[in-house]
Image (tube, rainbow, N blue to C red; front, side, top):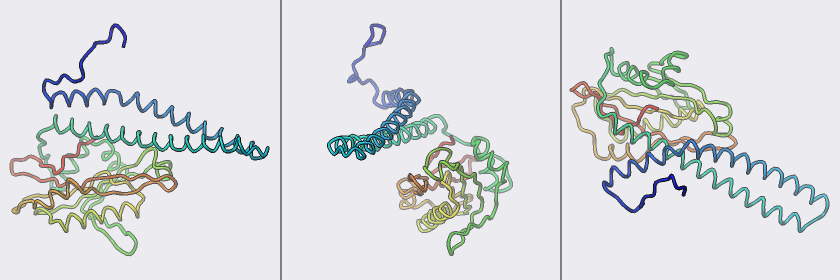
Length: 277
């Protein structure tokens, strides 16, 4: 450590909650640099594997069995390193999203319901005010009301739907722009566990049929007279929609079903709270 850097005892804790958030902030500040390092490592490992593969072919042509065995071992180590690098990249991506979500909950306590003709219009006005991707999708294709998606031999109807196609790289390798998709159902009472699971299934099958990754899956509730069941609450927090993307190199994408309630005090209530990036 240089003379200008401040020494500190990592074991010293004053306020656990505050110190945890500061630690998370410090880690998040390192994310851009870590992503650049991972990108460089991807390039280095990929180039090295191609060179090793070329030498394997040369040694095979020269009938050099010992050289082929050594190079194959190096190739296997390189592939394993590449796999570990992908896992590290996935962890950094998860940490970055999780940090932003926790920070958003910390900073945004109350959300006022905007004016609109019905719950769907009010919700999409709120979302589009903060979500540039939704605003773009609505401008290009419009918000589709009472939209039906055909998936296999079944049809699924959503009270509102908006989408943007993913990039070709994402469709093939799960890398690049994942696109955007919004699925909304409107209800006048809190959903049952069966209704949540049915909505989950409808979004999953619709995404698979359309080649989309779910960005938001929302059940908007207005004027509910019942209470949210504990089993539904647990399901919303622990059982997200999971969709695979990528034909050649695939990756799983998770999206929680979110219940957005219009409260009598003119505020939204979110279960769970999902920040708008």
